[in-house]
Amino acid sequence: MLKLNLKKTVLTIFPILIIFFFDRISKNYVLKLAEIEGKVDMYLTEYLNLYLIWNKGIAFGLLSFDENFLYTLISLIIAIVTAIILIIAMKENGIKRYSLIVVFSGSIGNLFDRVYYKAVPDFIDLHVNNFHWFIFNVADIFITIGVICLIYDEVFLNNKKNNEK
Image 1 (cartoon, rainbow, N blue to C red):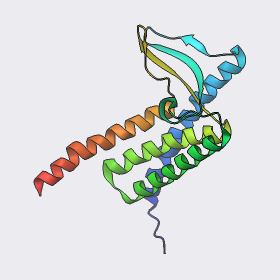
Image 2: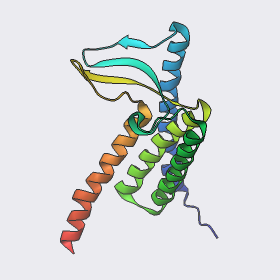
Image 3: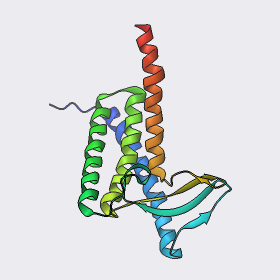
Image 4: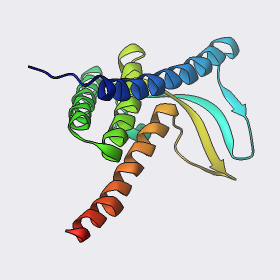
C-alpha cells in the first residue's frame, strides 16, 4: 500500500503550483498585451525587451516543425520525459529532489502551452548591443535554474560525498 507522507507531498506540490502559476501569469500578461496591441515589442531597459514569438520546437526553438505529426511526436516525447523527471524527483531527496521539481514545473508550464496553444509563447529578450540571446519565457528560467542546481549537486556535492568515502 502507498504510504503518503503529507509533509513531503506538500513540499512537492507547493513549488510545482507556485512555479506553474507564476509562468501562467507572465504568459497571460504578455498574451493580453499582444491581444490589445496586436503585437508585443517593448523596450524595457538597455539589456531587456519583451518580444513575443511562438516557439513550435524544443529548447530555444530547436527542431521547429510546421508538420503536425512531428510536432505531436516531439510533444509526446517531451510529456514522457517530463513524467520521468517527476518519477525520479519523487525518489530523490535534498537539493536533487527540489532541482528536479523545479525542472518539472517549468516543463509542465511549457507542455501546457504546447497542448493548449500548439506552440510556446517566448517573450523575454536579453541582449547586449546587437547580440541577442535566444528569446525565452519564465518556465525556461526555472528549467535552467533546476538544471544548474543539478549540475552543482553532481559536480560539487556528490564529488564531496565520494571523496569522503
